[in-house]
Image (cartoon, rainbow, N blue to C red):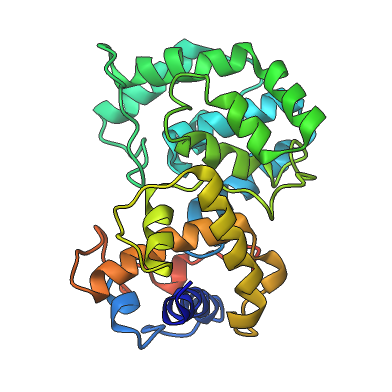
Length: 300
């Protein structure tokens, strides 16, 4: 690992979390003097501080934590497959699955141009010739509902994020690079389903952005591919360095493999801007992201 790159990576974590803390204290914008972080939008190092995740915990998963574990798994899948708090609020928690209700709600909201699917990631039809509502409900979600108890048993017997992630990859819409199933198992880590997962600090699903970040850390071509095994080995080495490089305002005890994996992706975006290799899609608009609608997460 290259010392300068490691310092830059953890420097991103330190400053991005400092931005969050300044906003949490109600400080006025600008919340940083870093010109890149001031101009462009980067998500929090800690996922539990992201706005949509905060809403999900407060209004969706936490109030239903006493429900059967298979039901919790399904509802996390439903939430992330559509991906907006506005839709989840309109739809509500599912105890009895009514596919037609969900499809009609999606179609109605889309026709009325109301916020429905998230813009943070793209849900494709995967080549299926039917509406997005049909694909999501009939092909991606219904099989999860029908086998929810099987997935709950995997979680119960393994208490492993990786094991449940592996089990979900055989479902259409949840396999491939494993992004969507990774979102779900991360959510389940904060529910009774996987609260005791033993691999929170040893495993993460490295996406393309995290792989690019690891390549930058090691001075390799950013386009060089790698196996999940290699990526996890390298991410674990970074996690071990966290106490050395994280500043006191960053709660090192809460820096886990998800924090490392996600921060590598965001830091790669940061480096692309710094090196003139590209820019993120979204600008960080302080006038829109005012403290009036700021919600505190659980990681201070």
